[in-house]
Length: 176
Picture 1 (cartoon, rainbow, N blue to C red):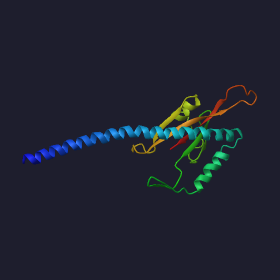
Picture 2 (picture 1 turned 135 degrees about the vertical axis):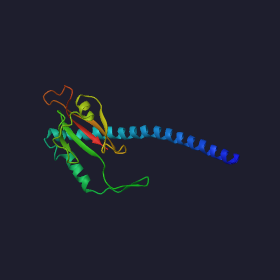
Picture 3 (picture 1 turned 45 degrees about the vertical axis):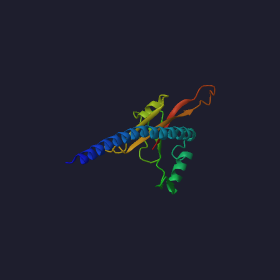
Picture 4 (picture 1 turned 135 degrees about the horizontal axis):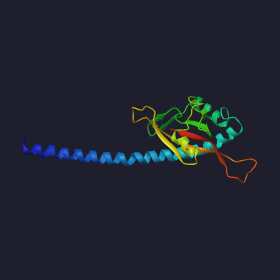
């Protein structure tokens, strides 16, 4: 092989390795930023929806109250959004609420009402007054199916003693 070809191949090899390192570092820096942004939006959403859900819970309307009606209506409506060239046609949020024991009392997907979620980190930590979050794969064998779950406490004040701080009566989790 001629010396010119060897130099060319060596140069090409070095450029390829450098490009791989730059791309790898770029991906490793971007991934945490995307997760952090998603988690931030889910925290806000969970806290807002928990305020609605606690009112439904207080009125014994968790299955057909304002929150349940909103999600039922969302499922009926078509979504048409073009987000940076990607067409979005449906809402991809799942919301579930648990009672103080961690048993699911509302699930926007309708799948797990009555299931015991008390051992899942999002519910377990939230019911203890801590920040509850977890990330679980929808398909255990596929790393690209990660679903983030962020919970907020459902807080209720004692009507007989309004000066006492609110207590946790359940948790509401938003998953995406």
